[in-house]
Length: 288
Image (tube, rainbow, N blue to C red):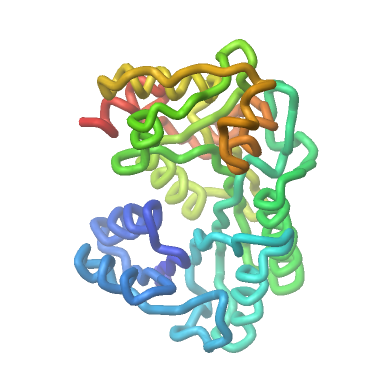
């Protein structure tokens, strides 16, 4: 088996690396900072430092590897320059045999609460989602031109241990009333790791999968359920008309889109059985 390289080996990538290492696979985590190197070293994960925002050459060969691209795009603009630099590095470092890219369900844009599968048209409006769609399109061109296999995972909101909005609840920040709140979707980090492995090992070239637990709820319902599970006070509620005066620009962006994600293809074609198919099960583990 060829080596596995995880570009952007952070919250998800570290767990993914550990899964492969426990199975006896050879793994390298690629991080952009010295702190990242130290974090992976402490976890016993082989790592190299490379910043996709810079111009330094790739520090290792990529020829024939299985590459997970988890590195986030730039914080601004509508183009993912980091993915462009990663692809450009293939000419010097070699082309991966297979690449799994972590995208976002935001590429669908606002779907007015409709159930959305992978055939739904991509109509992103937020810059962060436009950057992800730009990355998808660049990677598809690479796959077509160079023959590397590509699987795209369009991932919903990731939650798990250490990744819950508890501080927001403690601060008592308001949310939109449930009857006005948009639908949102989530996936537990452990299920996402299992899906990443299944996609790399069993996905077909060109596949796209929605990654969610298949049980959407409104964002407000999510916070209410988290508050109850964590023993915290529920957040105060405001109308959508009042929201812009109380919520951050980033939160308002999330509130501007509503969709319910179908994960049928994930379950049927990859055969993934989720460990945490509902929020209640996932929160119990994340807070345990």
